Length: 350
Image (cartoon, rainbow, N blue to C red; front, side, top):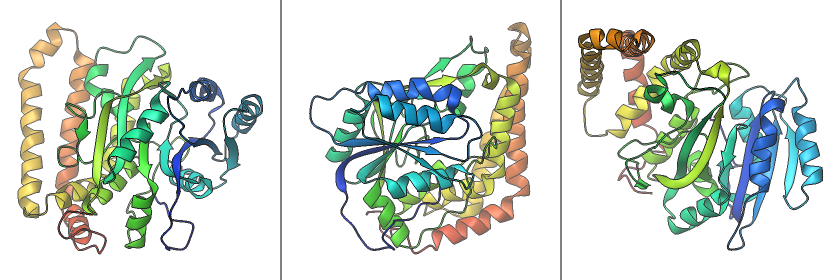
């Protein structure tokens, strides 16, 4: 995700509060329940917040739906803006540039935030000044009964726990999924002021290439900030029936593999005191062992009539190994480049 401060790299103090940004591409059919959940936010204390809907070159009535919501919900400080340049990164940058609060909450157009989400997120960020990114717990809200393999791949849908318990997951995982994530604006500004420039582009339209959220979280962690997960920060993630199939999962994995040479490099760069080839061989060994375990359980899959799940797992592990092998030099090049970057904290502390 490519974001840049709006004041030319000069430090700034932003108002305390949360800017909720929804980036939309042809979101007409998904947007209304998401907006209703935001309109229903409750607060025990006064928290300043705003809602920004970014219409990212939609060809449907997304803009009209958002504008009608703003007109009929005057208690919500809502603005609707357009971003003609296609791509999630461009839409997020637009929302970032027009927002005015210290905390940025990226709410997808199919995320239904729990009624206390905004206040809870604000309080967590206020209590942990070294946390740059906060993630919550997405519960799947499937349009139809999900396939039997869904639980094994639910993280692909930005759902499920992001840690064993609430707390710091910087060393454990190093990132949170983008849905429902909250960023500290001053940490982002600090990162970009130090010269960070992302290596990845994010999704455009119906493209399923991904990794921008992981890259940004990893970069903030390398810069000395912390990544946090809170299991009480709850939202429902609506999943339409057309995404609950094998073909969609394969496309998602293709998007991940497309960016593997960068995502693996960040993971290796975070492990600062170990050599590249040791880390690379550990990955090869891990996925090979997983592949062998799946093959060993082949008859069990047949007995349970889970052939589709078997093929999915074989596809995932096998193609990941292949991608690690053919991209080894690209991964090494990116790892070296990241480790030498000026924006990395030398002592691991911000």
